[in-house]
Image (cartoon, rainbow, N blue to C red; front, side, top):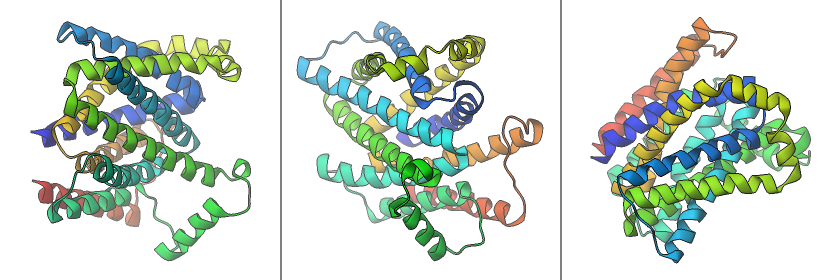
Length: 316
């Protein structure tokens, strides 16, 4: 039951990520500002109280608010990384480490374990997602690994090293997302799904308001230029946020039913659809998004899609 629900959520997310990259590159240019608007609109989830009115105990309410705040801070790190580079560079780093962190956190805090096939499926899905999203270069794997280690741990300050900032923001986002998913799984094991989901979104709304406590954030968020751009793009933004909510609910519901690490490893599915969307848009609207797909690059991504198919077969 949880498998088709998770897949549908990730398919929708592929379109949402493409739109997020467009807004961050062309409209907003600030991860904090974009996260603020995303967090503010999460209050719209209160309409779901029509399906299930629920008020948790104070202890659970605190945990649900904590989950909402954790997700907000994960999105800030995610948007920072996404703003720094192409979606097809950021997504594989974050997508590869979320299931790894989820596996470790779920094992220690939830006692979740995997079968051999489940563990093999995670590895194959991660490898397939990385193949689809990573760019082909002349260096071999060892040379590239050494280069990334130097970028991450070298003496040059991160302010002057955008690649290091990209890696750090991506890893922070991956860990924060994994921690959120494990925490939300713990909540769903003990609380009703719809009611607790709504309170986590209210927590995200409160977290967005708390961003205004920092003067520099207020200056960024309420910049006149940004306000004009936001109002001009409001219909598109709201449409994308609606799709994001649908995807988010589907993935959260799948997590409430299945294994956190396995469901997070299914992000390889969204890489396939992200690739298709990028291919179509780069041909029709090169000024909006551009991605080169020729020869070895196309073969690499085909092999990645094949590995994702194998990973899904192992899960089924």
